[in-house]
Image (cartoon, rainbow, N blue to C red; front, side, top):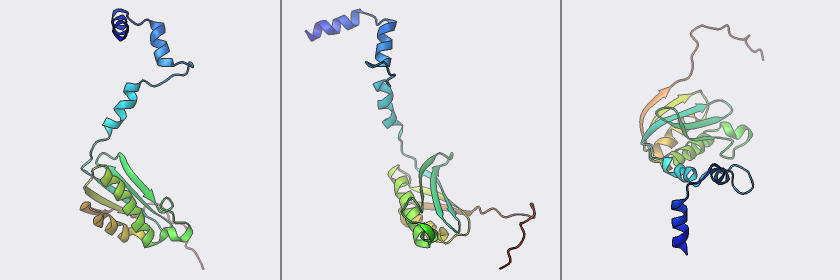
Length: 160
């Protein structure tokens, strides 16, 4: 009986209404073809090297690891790591943020990273150390903190 069904499918060409029922599904709502859903897993490929962007402000520490083109692979912040309030700005929070971020990037196949640090927060040095000890080889450490060259007028000085 299965032979008859197979020969029937080969002989008949699908009409436009058959194609619409395949795309739309039984309830009339558009359904994604199975071939598109399968293709997503094959896109996740190994990324050997990337850039770690660490932003250490006085209130928070953020880490974002991207590939060389700038596409984000993993990211983490002190709030995402479970710290609240003034504990977000500590060196320990910076360590935890960088470890969590590096672990996710290593899972994607990354083993070499360039570090770019911005800001003057407490989690700055500890985040660099955490990435280095997580198993990734650090090629370059750059400080990209913006420094004014007497451009805009500064706000008035605070009096305490």
